[in-house]
Image 1 (tube, helix red, strand yellow):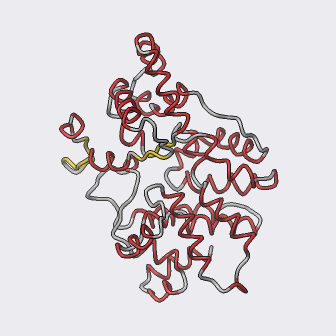
Image 2 (spheres, rainbow, N blue to C red; image 1 turned 135 degrees about the vertical axis):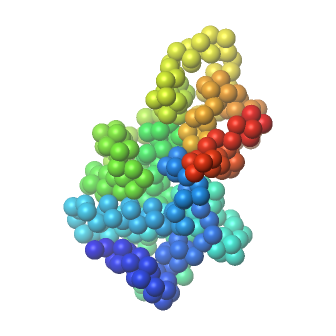
Length: 319
């Protein structure tokens, strides 16, 4: 069993002293936050007490079952231990992080900053700066390959990883993404496995030009709507015929912006409503670069429980 899984088991058995030496686990376990993608939640009331820690445990369990060289396994383990920390922490700790300028709303960036700050507290004799640099980049870019496949982030956002990746790193990256995605759902992992292999190959081969077009990103962002019967390409062509100038605006907007929680927030909106939301945001941010756009606040506002199941609040949706 991985040492991280043993630490979680110790904590669950009541040994809170483990938190003195396992700082990552302290942040994940001592929290009032429930920062989780509501796509995967059927009932808000029945949501786990600490969904982030449960997710991290699942990712580590996936890793525990994979066959990897020990060094690679230890690296992936450490990435998974730290990669969700920005979603957690007690209020006073989160205030301290924010005071230090940590980007908690975009959790891959915030978690990398938290990891780096914790490493700085270690005695120099116990540090391996080269390993820390690699881990920082892996935490900073963790999950982005999956977000790229979903159309949420630009390929260029993975540049820090592309710059350090080598062909030998493919098994490590593929295993890391396997854990990240399968920790959410084994079904989702099965559906993206082949494309994930391709994207990880590009990264390890140093490919720098694999951006998706605006239409392709939009198609991917409407994947759940498509599964419900929306013909994305048809409605796109119909919209484009009367909105050629709007397409140019949105092409520029998408070219500079990564987005988070898009499907979880906008799937229940029609294609036209979705486009109008993007245009409103583009209009409000004209002249100021918006590299990161999180729909998490909207996602949290949209849902409530009705008869024990997560339901869209139509009044908030219409407002």
